[in-house]
Image (cartoon, rainbow over all chains, first blue to last red; front, side, top):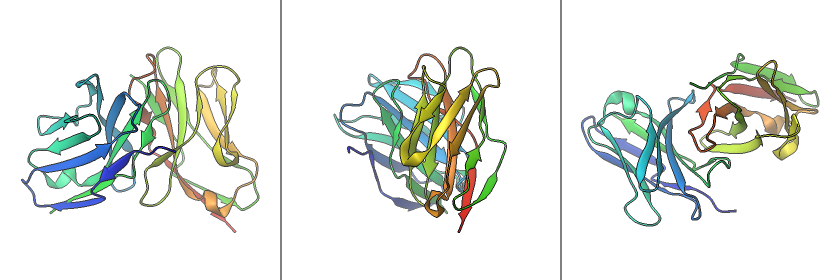
Length: 112
Length: 114
C-alpha cells in the first residue's frame, strides 16, 4: 500500500535557526496537509495545500511558516526562525479529496 | 467552525471485554467523521469513516462506530478488546466541502489489560 514518507524522523535545531521538514505524499493525491502534535496531545491543523497554493491555514501558521511543493513529489514545511514552543511532532498528510487523510510517521522537531 | 469532543482522557478495559471510546462533534451541514489510531512514535492510522449511508460503520481490526445524528455522536466500539488495541485514539470531523481540513479531538488513551 502506498505511504506518505517524511524525513528526517528527528530534527534537533537551535532556537532561531531555520528548519525544513520534508514529505513525499502519495503519488496520485492532490491535497496536502501539515499537522503538529505536542507531546502526544491534540493533533493541530497547520495548513492545507492544493493546486500549488495554500487553501487554508490555522492561526498557528504565522509568517514564520511556509510550505512549498518544489517538484512533482516533495512537499516541504519551512520554519524560518524556530522557537522553543515549535518543538513538536510534525505530520504530513495527503488525500485524494474527500477520502481519508493518509499520514506519514512524522518528524520530531526539538528546538533547544 | 467544526469541533470534536472526546470526553475521556483514558479508557481502561479488560481483554475480551467490549470497549467504547466516546466522541461527539459539532459541524455545520453534514459531517464527515473519522477515527484514527496512533501507536507510540508512529503517525495516525485510519480506522474507519462515516460519510453517508448506514449509521453503523465497520472498519479495520474489528472496530466499528455508530453515527447518531440526534446525539451528534460517533462512538468507537469493539466487541472484544485485545491487548494490542492499546493505543491513542482520535476522532476527527470535517464539514462540507469534503476536502476541508480534518479537525481532531484531543485523543483518548485506550489501555487493554490482560
